[in-house]
Amino acid sequence: MRRTELIRALVRENRSFAGDLIAPLFVCPGKRVRREIPSMPGQFNLSVDEAVAEAQEVRSLGLPAVILFGVPEVKDARAFRRVRRPPASSRKRHRPSRKKSTTCS
Image 1: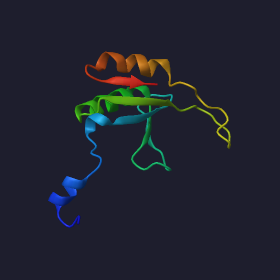
Image 2: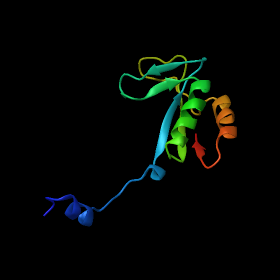
Image 3: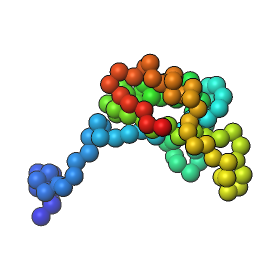
């Protein structure tokens, strides 16, 4: 029944658009930091300056929101030392650059 693209389009239940997505940004201390997260290919630990630039890039691609995750400087093997909120500087720095976007933190 779903052999052709036309039939698949007719019976498709869900459609996703860029405007439906939220981009995760992992904010860490430092400047000019862009370090790949080994367990999540394509995701990076970003310093505040890099996170602001990334948020602007995400917005230009049509994603209306980012969610900020704070990354602590030090954590033990059990990840006990966690950050409840991203650094305030990342939330403040992103705010002026947004026009039709939002930040979740």
